[in-house]
Image (cartoon, rainbow, N blue to C red; front, side, top):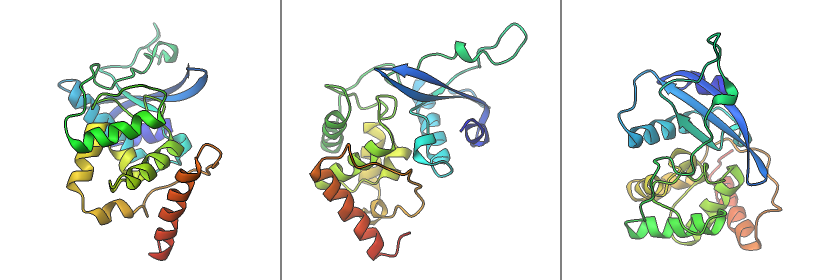
Length: 214
């Protein structure tokens, strides 16, 4: 995974480490861009672009739960990477919480809250930093579809905040959300899915099979 981060477009240096958060172990990625990001919004956009790129190369379980953009990596006195010195991922990618602004954002925010261990979410909060993973991204897409929003798991990986995902939903033709041929899925247990979620995922996969999608 660290090699994939280093190979991503615009990344000068990359690292990864695990964190024990809320009773579970999560994988966190860290990148330093060649060109410094001007502000938190630029860092969020860069992290999303890196996630979108590596999600086409790695199975879902190897995609980090968070990607933090740093100005520089922490180092030891000898100049080597100080891995324990990497900062704990922030819950919000931008450091502040702004409520959803549009009907699409509010509908997606409701799905985020239903799936994640949170009671509210800001439009810039990152799905994966809040505990989302590849399995939950499938559930999110299924529930969003049930709400009439054309969302695919790939769209979640490429647009992990409420604001970005809502913009993608509103900008993309409905057919784009149905095309998941480039998405790689990790082997998945269905034990965490409700009957409604499982039925929705089954319908989605059946539709892909009918279209000849691998």
